[in-house]
View 1: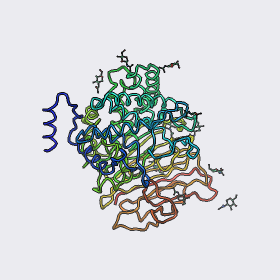
View 2: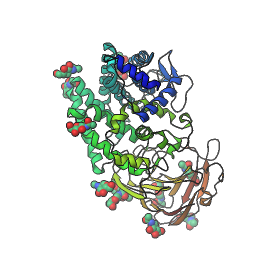
View 3: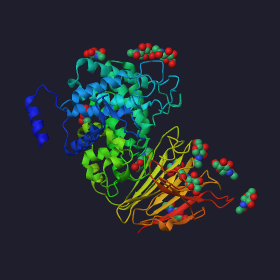
View 4: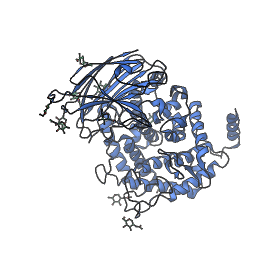
Length: 545
Ligand SMILES: *[C@@H]1O[C@H](CO)[C@@H](O)[C@H](O)[C@H]1NC(C)=O
Ligand SMILES: *[C@@H]1O[C@H](CO)[C@@H](O)[C@H](O)[C@H]1NC(C)=O
Ligand SMILES: *[C@@H]1O[C@H](CO)[C@@H](O)[C@H](O)[C@H]1NC(C)=O
Ligand SMILES: *[C@@H]1O[C@H](CO)[C@@H](O)[C@H](O)[C@H]1NC(C)=O
Ligand SMILES: *[C@@H]1O[C@H](CO)[C@@H](O)[C@H](O)[C@H]1NC(C)=O
Ligand SMILES: *[C@@H]1O[C@H](CO)[C@@H](O)[C@H](O)[C@H]1NC(C)=O
Ligand SMILES: *[C@@H]1O[C@H](CO)[C@@H](O)[C@H](O)[C@H]1NC(C)=O
Ligand SMILES: *[C@@H]1O[C@H](CO)[C@@H](O)[C@H](O)[C@H]1NC(C)=O
Ligand SMILES: *[C@@H]1O[C@H](CO)[C@@H](O)[C@H](O)[C@H]1NC(C)=O
Ligand SMILES: *[C@@H]1O[C@H](CO)[C@@H](O)[C@H](O)[C@H]1NC(C)=O
Ligand SMILES: *[C@@H]1O[C@H](CO)[C@@H](O)[C@H](O)[C@H]1NC(C)=O
């Protein structure tokens, strides 16, 4: 009510005053809940948000989230909001790297108190002391600020923002996959798209045909992979698919009619992403079924993923999480700091999303199998085959792959989940049983209630390690074998492994192995009989209990 009166007053008062982006109900609630959380950690004395970024740090402030917050302040535009946003922009841009001969040229600080990157005590370490993706994240946010809110900013600040975007885009041209420890290849979808969009936008805005040309070339390299099977190379990551959609939305909104390659293609790419993501989404479980490239956990109800923010903006928070715990108690809660930006783009974004997709996100369409392909060179020697079976309370999703490294594109077995089983347990929580990858090749066969896994390059020393959810409160606390798993009967029905697993616990404060992305779990490891000459394989049957 208050808001609508406010809005009415504003619109009556001001043909000249800038109107915020109009937000529909779901987008507004996403916006408000994120902003009210961030208001609490904003430090007006220094005009930065406090560091709320895993792992929590004592004292410092944080740069990237502060820029997202400044965009939220401009959108909200109440009280001192605009004044604070301007201070933020001046601070962050003031600390942007100005030395054009360093690799991190045009990049922003990770946090403002950090020592100068490259100074005697502070070596430049990519993804650590400096983060090459901060140019993409912050540069694209500044593009939205310029497009939507520049008339709230004094002319000198407008120019400063433009110049900052430009320098960031120049610095981004220094990135070459495989050189200087950088991994920015076209298959690194989210980061590649942010750079592409920023280059195309900046080239057009600043009349820099080199940037326009680079943007178009990078867009085409992305599309060559995407069009292979209409999938992102960084496949089905609950966090990073959301970032790819973010970058593409900027392209669709601000570059559609410019003739740039990414602008012309963004709309159909967004639609294709939702086409498959909506088939992988299980609305009963509030999870994307597997497999996942680069996930930050094993149950989306327990961490904040960017895709959850898009779904919230499209159809409402009730459809996003099964549990009602406050967002700040979830892991990766810092990713909720992007929400104001998602909210500002989301009503436009929604115009690109079909009714079919919306209805698939809202209610389960019925048992089905998704099969598709994705290709992420140089990690993938050949395209991966994806098969996912979804039923109302049980999903099994897998990759077959042949790769140059263990752990997929990002060489990280904790986030590359090539075989994922999830189910709804009797109490309503989500169980999971996921392969932890230890091999460079996997052949996976899925059928309803069945999963066969084979290591074509394995031998007698290979083992299959599964990350198993701890049982919910009220069910058995101790797991000594497959028979103790809550809500799902898991049977080894074939294969060449020893069918009795080694069991270990990877706990928060005990056990013999580490938690992964803050998820404690059981480690069930199936080994091969000594000296076996068989190809390692394991065959499962599942039944809900
Ligand atoms: C810029 O960086 C280069 C390479 O590290 C260094 O040699 C040069 O002194 C730096 N310039 C300034 C102005 O700091
Ligand atoms: C780019 O070119 C257009 C048309 O020639 C001109 O209006 C605009 O001021 C130029 N922008 C910049 C940043 O030079
Ligand atoms: C564009 O690239 C060419 C060739 O590398 C270079 O000579 C020229 O200065 C660049 N133009 C701009 C505006 O950076
Ligand atoms: C983008 O441009 C095409 C061609 O002009 C048009 O059909 C389409 O509706 C535009 N899309 C958006 C999202 O504006
Ligand atoms: C892409 O995947 C679809 C199933 O989603 C399949 O029908 C089609 O043949 C695939 N195309 C290619 C080129 O593999
Ligand atoms: C994917 O499927 C195709 C067609 O069945 C097959 O030729 C290829 O070897 C499979 N790829 C992997 C990585 O298993
Ligand atoms: C994986 O790809 C490599 C390179 O193309 C090939 O030599 C090898 O035979 C493949 N391995 C499997 C298990 O398909
Ligand atoms: C798995 O292997 C068994 C033999 O142990 C076979 O009967 C079954 O059809 C296979 N299942 C799938 C999904 O390939
Ligand atoms: C089995 O595979 C491991 C890992 O690839 C390798 O180090 C080992 O030499 C292999 N053992 C045999 C007997 O081939
Ligand atoms: C799982 O347990 C096995 C022993 O059974 C151990 O070798 C392996 O390192 C563990 N893996 C993880 C990811 O904890
Ligand atoms: C496995 O092979 C090793 C070396 O060849 C041998 O010492 C050992 O006894 C064998 N183990 C079994 C269980 O056959």
